[in-house]
Image 1 (tube, rainbow, N blue to C red):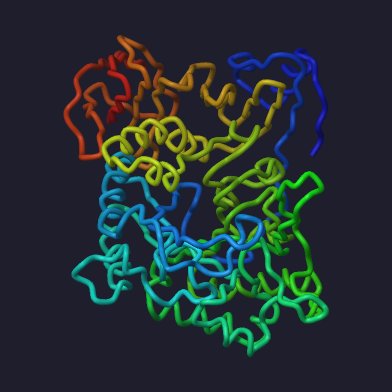
Image 2 (cartoon, helix red, strand yellow; image 1 turned 60 degrees about the vertical axis):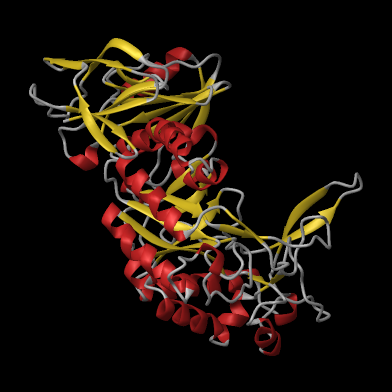
Length: 496
């Protein structure tokens, strides 16, 4: 992958050589660096059941276990029996219904956070009991509420699965004594148990060799229909221990240290091999593994062909060497936002307890991120142009984007499809004759060119899209390959 700072003339020449139809629809100030996309050698090590590049993936935060700080202010060895509940299983279904209406039936995957015991970060390495605080009143077993939610969500184009952690071990876990006896917890050379950023840590290699990981996975799959869901999200799937340290200035920080367990004598590479075995074991059961992050998250050498989707996607290298169908992200960071990002449903619904207001925010953020990302994922990437104040994405078939000031603008064949707040974007999962229009602040008689590839009939109808459904919309007209619309602030409209 060659990189170099180019002057404006050289930049135009580079894009022309790539077959760009238009080179000046977006510009960046000052010198820029052009990074050509170069496809990495790629072969799946697993067998993905979902196409994550054509799916909206998010989490829903049900509950957080509380704890009494005993070390470094953030460290925890166990929860204190209390929890903060953000939503119940029944409320989660209402969120899923609203998201399905606003995403127009786009395939979705939702991972539940805090579904077990006393909520998120509670009782690992065990994950065999449901959280009573988020369960339906009619269910004696809280896991019945999870099963109900997984079943009901299918009616709304949504696969529900779990957010789990395989690395942490709390001393009040039902499995803790068994794991101590089996000697699978990470230890220093002198036998001292290792405490990471919080919790003790499980040695992947030791647990795998003794068959305890397989038992954990088998039992989970017996309790809940994870195999049917075909996906699971593994949190904090690090290849090194996040170790809390205090600097001379008194500030807390995290240092990643490997191998995981010096006591056991496994090398870093053996720890990584154990992680590969874990992923392959899930794969043998028909379950995709998605994970927390790539780019600074230390997934430790497990990359191409193992994870089809990352919750945090901060790797420029991945974005410039893999297609979206080979690796994509939920939250995208940095200059590669020019290739598209997604609305973070987990944070949004946790921070907006008023569901009506939350759906208003979700609608806005979906249109400004995921809607565009779904469109961009259908085009091959050619280059990422980086400047001091933003970045430009260069795609096949004359598609260009610009990420600048926290907004993503899109053009095709020199015609603007999105200026970052107003847009007319093809909704390709609905077919080749569907468009979504959106305006953040409202617009009057704004005319858009219908992009090539969209077969919009002059008799197309319109609907205003809300979290409760659709209503007829008539404030538009179609003339040739142009659409003129008048939209109210934060109004989303489907035309097809």
